[in-house]
Image 1: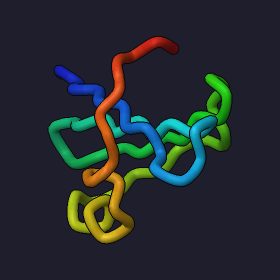
Image 2: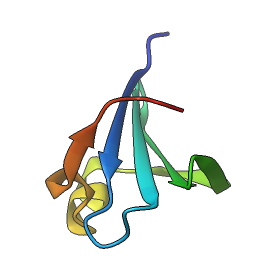
Image 3: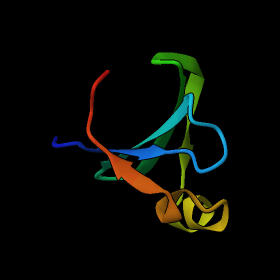
Image 4: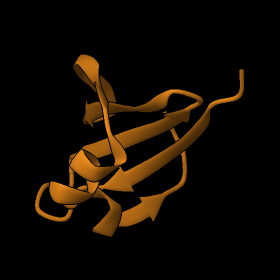
Length: 64
């Protein structure tokens, strides 16, 4: 199983980074604040992630 991980820099909070992991069955969304994971993360659909605007954020290199 191959996972594609993409990080997005939050537009309004420079300390917050979103990780979107694309898996075979859907997407997984994690939130990092100052480099530490905040919460467990959640399974989400592509439609939901688009609706909250994460795909519009600037992509970021993985430095975690």
